[in-house]
Image (cartoon, rainbow, N blue to C red; front, top):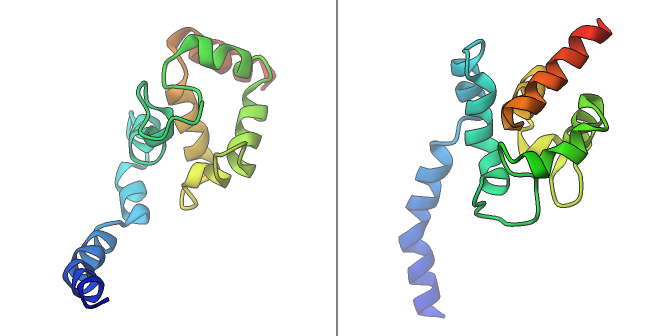
Amino acid sequence: MLKLGFIVVCFLPFTFALAANHHPQEFLQSIKGTKDEGAQIVKHFCSSCHAEKPLIPLGAPRVGNENDWTPRVKNGIKSLFKHTEEGFNAMPARGGCFECSDEQLVLALIAMLPEPLKKEVLSDEKDKK
């Protein structure tokens, strides 16, 4: 028991140091309006599950993987956004980015799509306007 207490006391400062460095609002504000805003959001918030080789392999569609995204895009960007906003399967609501605006979540979704599907989704959205 004494060893456990010692270990906890030793690692407590590291826990506070890591927590002190996580400022999502500041990060999101610093990238707002940049050309690669969506890609930066994906890298910061989504890559643990959505990377080509995810740290948390739960079957989430991988960034840029056409086979993963094609069936999902067929339901439209609104369906993708709804799943992102509400959470889907193991994904938490808003993809875990509670500080992200709706616009930023859409930018992140688009950034994850392979190029042909990005063009398809963007042209569909333009046609609807």
